[in-house]
Image 1 (cartoon, helix red, strand yellow):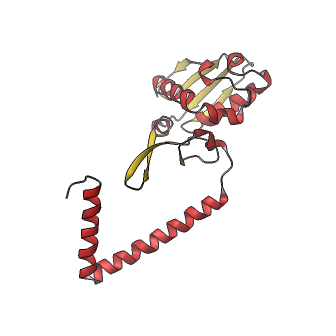
Image 2 (cartoon, one colour):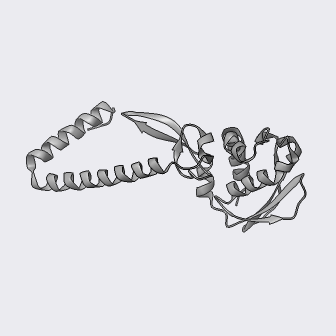
Length: 194
């Protein structure tokens, strides 16, 4: 377990995901105003303390909401135990630390649009956890069931097309050559090797 990795991830989250937290905590000023420190650390667990909540929110009544949002983020990569604290600090105990999920909290992903790669971000919390987005503020918005259905339909269609191409490739030599040439053209257009 490494406190440095968590601190780095929190810095990235406080830079990028301010709008996402703002959805859950209306009076949030800035996540950067929160201080994170290590109380203790060993091979099995890390005890963290978040302080300066009065500087992070304009309404002190929103502190419990901010604590819940922080816990939700921490739960993505670890089992979280809360220790009794006041409104000025928040002490958490992390057990069963998963670095793979922590890295996901700071990763920048790319979405393909035509033949170009466009930078995007991956939601690491909220109803759209794991989805790619350009605006992190949409991560906390309710999921669109129409878009979810459309994604499922397109996934089914892609599966059917792929299976049909596979059968056609085996049975039809001319089709196989045509497919190979099409793939070669595509690789050349993308600047790949033959």
